[in-house]
Amino acid sequence: MAVLSKRKILLVDDDPLILRIVTQSLTASGYQVEAAASGVMAIALVQQNPPDLILLDVMMPEMDGYEVCQRLRQVRQGVSVPIIMLTAMDETESVIKGLRSGADDYVTKPFEIDELVMRVEAHLRRTERDVAANPLTTLPGNPTIEQALEQRIEQGKPLAVMYIDLTNFKTYNDEYGWLKGDQVIKMLAQRIIHAARLYGKPNDFVGHIGGDDFIAISIPDCAESIARFIIDEFDSAIPSYYSEDARERGYIQAVDRRGKTFRAPIMTVSIGIVTNSEQPFRNVAQVAARAAEVKKYVKSLAGSHFAFDRRHK
Figure 1: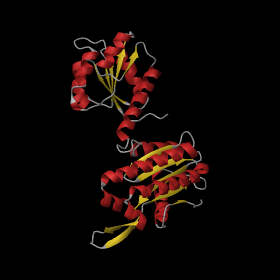
Figure 2: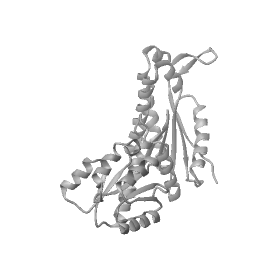
Figure 3: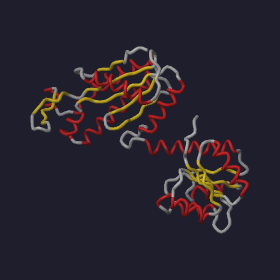
Figure 4: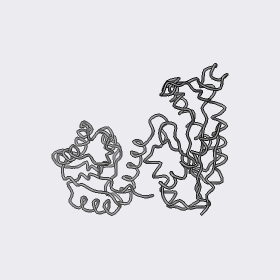
């Protein structure tokens, strides 16, 4: 698993040997490392330029790691930074004290440097997922989507990428309000997740680009079944989100920006699918461009549809 490059780690320890060994190992793993030999220095550095993660020794003169951790959690710049404590004490009482002071994890000295690096990587990835998740659906957002695509493109294995969005969503939002619109977005997210679980592979990926735009990553053999299930489930559920009158008419009577009335049909879902079956993917931008072309075509059709990009080499 690739390390999140250029992430900054603050290492707080008064032992020169530990500082040197850990700094060398983390630097070799692709991280930027800043060292502090005391708790006072650490707090000042965090306030000046917050790191992405802090490795904090417990046993230090003047101010021990517990107090440093508590103080860091009291300043704005240190509230959400992951803190891993380095301690020579592995008794339950010491561990509990560290966690209660605000630490996220602990590593007992002497430690294996490989384990420490893996702990660092795990916490950074968790933090990235938390920050990147869409707050409405809690699905991974754009940073994680891009990373997932990059990893799969590099692997060169069979890959199908589905870009999913709605037609007439804005008109629905204008008519019924954003709270009802959010309910539709959540419903679509649930249908996509369910489709991937039923017809995809265990390592398939579903992300929320934003608004009514979603992405699902699977393999070419599964893509059509996933797309069909999403369309069938969405088309079956969406009428219930409209008023009885709108359902009977099959449209909303709306007004455009120029004051002209028009009929906006019941929402439909469009899915553009691109694969590397005939043409390999070079990068994420190429995948997005190809998918946008296919989705534009699909959205020109009446009703809910999916389509594959059939281009060859």
